[in-house]
Length: 155
Image (spheres, helix red, strand yellow):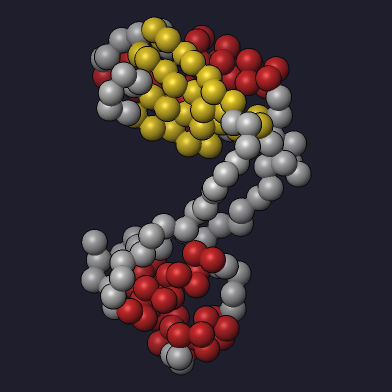
């Protein structure tokens, strides 16, 4: 972990909540000059603490409000298989998160799709891409919590 002080943590908290705040607004909220604030933010970007700033979109309003969690057990465990499978998954825009897991499931995917037919198209793409032992899908009924804000160190 990078060395952060309490001002850095306050800056990160503000940016996680609303990255559209102006530099002036951010500087006022943390009691820094705009130049000092900009330098700190720039340093954290260069160090990789701040990876990027993005806009969060409404899946519902964009017509992809169905969240599906897909558990996959691999058909093989070779480097070539992994490269092929990873490349195929990364090409699917419906896959918004992709993890290699420990335990009974080898891979976990989070999808945002319009409906079951859209999920089925993704499913067919996955089974064409690589040999899979098992594919299981769970459709989210209700979103109970979702955040992009990471827990920050208490300084």
